[in-house]
Figure 1 (tube, one colour):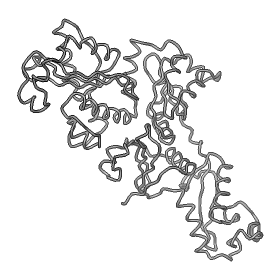
Figure 2 (cartoon, one colour):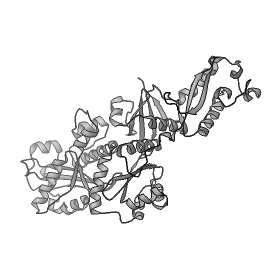
Figure 3 (cartoon, rainbow, N blue to C red):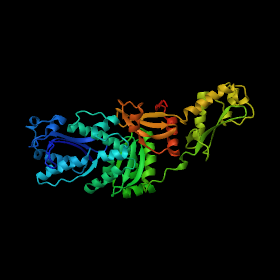
Figure 4 (cartoon, rainbow, N blue to C red):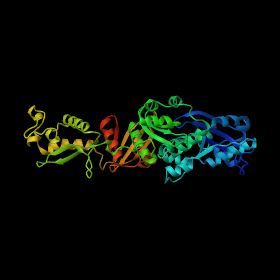
Length: 455
């Protein structure tokens, strides 16, 4: 659990400042579950430059509560939370100073979104909240007011969590939470999970990730882990202490994140993703007559397939669909071994490429359509899919036929702008697994929106 915090102060000498406004958003990693926003009477003078910056003056604060009147609420809303602020050293120091004046020792773990941004969103011109938000397309209102800045920090932190592929932030947070509140039983863990698409992380008592999985219904999948009797499930049931998760909205994003994060985190109960999960490939060649032939065969070591399949039957079913859709010849797709014309020619559903009757160029144009629609070699493109929320979409970036990463964007983002796009994307590894996942998903999901980018 996180407490996203922003504080406005009077300014003045170090450790003599007072709070003029505070905003706290309690965030469970997915949504805000509580919030507290209040002006505060600092009982001291506000520096003129601060008045000009924030617009908060002494007259506005005359009837505002004093810090001791809001202190209890601040303790309650931040209890068992990690404080998150933009330049957290400042906000945390100010809070501790105010509590020290009351004789109360206030102690919380903290995270700084400035430092996290430098690690996970490198090479930005500036890491000030306003400039960073503008560069990342994060909308801001009420700049230099506690609520506006805290809301912008919250949106930035969501982006940071998404880019944290090693899950370092979540693992450290789980450790903090475990000290104060261990999940009492498996049923309680299940009750707190969503029925949505995403990636889930099963943690032991030390907060370490012991298993990573993906599901279109996280609650249902975890329930299966907790009730199945197979060896893996029994190990999970013995070792689990908590489950964290990331909504993805898109199944494709979930598949890619699962693949990447298993490789990155190497959880003890995950078997590495099988290389032979996709065992069959689609290949092409020209025969002696110049016609393009397509074949399903075992993946070849030194030849890149057009697309891949989990088994031969899946590949054959694909070829049969392509025959119907593009009026291709069964014989040239290796599905019929006749020495003369194919069966479809006899029933007038083949134009005769099998016996050299059809124009080679006309046939190859249709065969190339199959290759084109199932390969993203040398293409610059975006794959747009469901987002985590109703006003959001997910995006997968491919440049020069190479998978670059994933991201999420609000519907008001101009994602055709390359600079904004690059800031939204969490870089990920391009490998055979990711290529197989993307090609298989593109083939199966007709609602996936594909945008080709200008080079």
